[in-house]
Image (cartoon, rainbow, N blue to C red; front, side, top):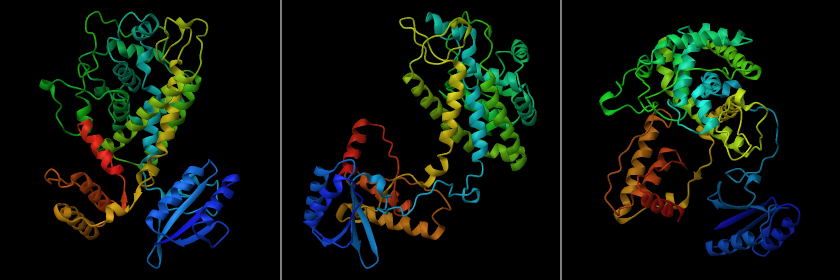
Length: 462
């Protein structure tokens, strides 16, 4: 087979790489070699390069296929010098090369608005006096999960107003009227659902993001949900669906220190409420249309909020903080601890940190759709099977033909692999997914047993 080596090495690694490749191939350029070589010889070259590789080493190996095609076999050293096809960039620009018209995520801005507002409100329930007492004294558990209390506070803020009304109030508020929220709490009945007071799909979606940023509702078997439209489904969520921890001696919803809505928080809330109003005006979505979009938008935004919460908490744990004066008059996001004098973070800082991380993650959604790393047509996948394994290629050819008929992006794929034990289901699934994805291979294999997971991983690795 004909092999081409391309070197992008720097400093001393350049001289070392040249010495190795000059012994096996003819140099056809300043940093390019070509030769005929067997697979065993190619393995020897890779071993030698790997042994001498440093952080300045970067060598790509291409195999010539036919008259017009080449395939990247491997890269030794720094893979960032090449793209996934082994191509070197000719120029680098710092400008945005993808315009708005090239982005088909039409509701990405709406997802960001919902994510930002939900992140700003998602831990308001931690301002509850009972929760703060638990953090400071470590003497009892929380009676109701903080996300359900946050949902009640969100309903108290919305107070059955339309999306335009509560967004306008949030945009124009230089100081949040906490008294109105607390007065509404006095009239709230524990038998009611907070979602009953969220009249529009936008506020309901934000309420869902708040209550589900840790756990999904877990209703008892005799209290199963009626699977109807999303907005009606949310109204069925009750505190005993996994959010009530201790029923007896539960204190009232009191907030003597107030709510975590300082100037920095209000600035972000005003900013995203303004963008929300702009989106409502631009999209001009009717209520029925919003209800139909509720599930995919909520699913995507929930992922961003959860990842943002995780990343922000992880970074906060790495910070070295000390408790300032009068910790009793401040709202904390996590336990202060009795054995040391360090504090993770203030509650308002945590809300702002989660908002920042969640929005940063939202920007990756278009990228994750089709630009994540994948396996490009490995030889083991394209090799035809024989004997008991021949069904793999028959199924793959059939699926590939059907995809050509209907178009690669016109529909999804659902299949049931009923092959018997020992006939290569694990490898057959990889071939099928390779055909479904049009020559690329990236998929998640979820198995119920650890031994099966390890076994499949070993087979794919080989």
